[in-house]
Structure formats: structure tokens, C-alpha cells
Image (cartoon, rainbow, N blue to C red; front, side, top):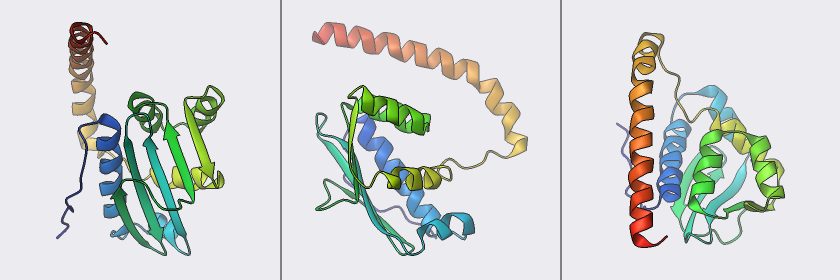
Length: 168
């Protein structure tokens, strides 16, 4: 039986996303997904992701097939990715586009330190994070998409109202 470890997760969208990514990576590291576990062999890597401005940092440690995640900053990460803010981090991480990362670096929306080649390696890992949707469920997802869009618009409106009321 798989148990989810209790982690300190802040009420911040980036930290929640990073924790969820960590949970999924943990599940994959413990699975029999050969393609994924082969990516972890002979690796001793620490990748830190966060936003200094938002006060969010979380790091993932891959050590020859073993995986762990931790809230806070790593002592000496192999690669560190710092987003200008939480929203930028969430947008770039959920987009899954390495080219968008490079554009964001040029625009000053994120900074990276360490071994840049690990970004490509981590991208290979990330392709396994979102599970494949079974064919029989795809029609239901298509039916739900318009409602999800409506909910997003509703949420954006009320977030805008709240920000206006708070003077942000």
C-alpha cells in the first residue's frame, strides 16, 4: 500500500504544485515503470525549484533509484530554478515546454544556477508525471472541458474582484 508522507505545504499555488509533483515522482520511483526507473539509475542529483520572491522552495533528491522531496532550500543543489513569482512558476511548469523556460530566462522571469543539462533530464522525468488517460474516459473529459473553462472564467473574475478590494 502506498502512503503519502505528510509534508509542510504552504498555501501557495507554486508550493502546492511542487508538492504534488513530488508525490507523483515518489509514486513513479516506487513503481515498476521501467522507462522511468531507468532514468534514475546512476544519478545523484538534487533539483531545487521555487520562487525567492514568494518565499517558496522545494527540492527533489534523486539518488540511484531512490527519490525524496523536501520543503525549503537544498544545501548545494545540482540545479536551482527560481521563478520571479508563483504564477510564473505554475504557468511554466504546467506548460511543459522547455523552449518557454529558455524564453523566460531571456525575459528575466526565471533564473537557473547549476547544471543546465539537468533541465532536459528532468523534462524526460516530467513526461511521466501526468498519467495516461484510459481511452474509455476520454469522452467524459471532452464533455467536462466546457464546464472547466466556465469555472476558470468565474474564478478569474472573483480573484480580480478580491485583488481590487485588497488594493493589489
